[in-house]
Image (tube, rainbow, N blue to C red; front, side, top):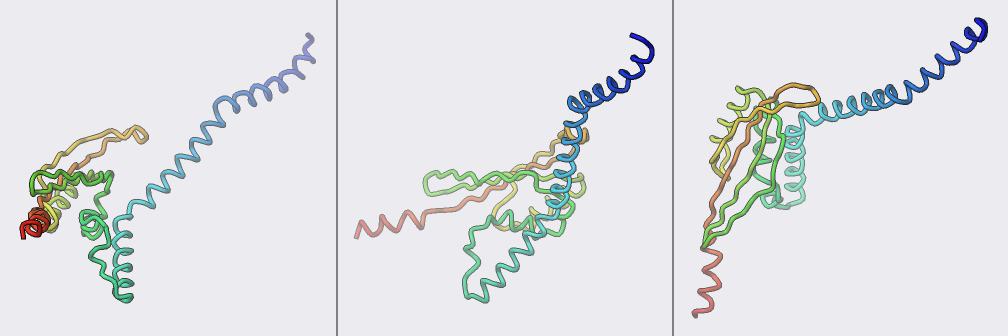
Length: 183
């Protein structure tokens, strides 16, 4: 090859190499960056979800009062209502809320709720104190603090895992059919 041919082929080869590099690495990186920004925006929008849930609950209660329906049996979990109306809920994020576990033994029913919250240590302690004092539908029976590494941001976060139990006596419900069969 002559020098002139090499000079003509070099830009074409450079352009082809640039297209191959873009196709292999850069295109996927740009798509991943867009997905990450979308997820970050969704996370920012979900930060004040407990507050928004409390506002929506109040509006539903007002509407049900206007319509004449009782909102006490609306089917929402009392723990979620307490979290949404708590004054420290802005600083503490609800990470996980597992379904209620119910254990029936003789005439007693034990309901256990497990919830995981994220925040700073002082905010988690304030929230836990408010929960122990203000939550009337059960008692805090166990608390576990745990650190976890978020692999996306490569930062550690503090988690608070709370176990809340309530024991209910179902003796009234089981005695009624028995008393009817005896008489």
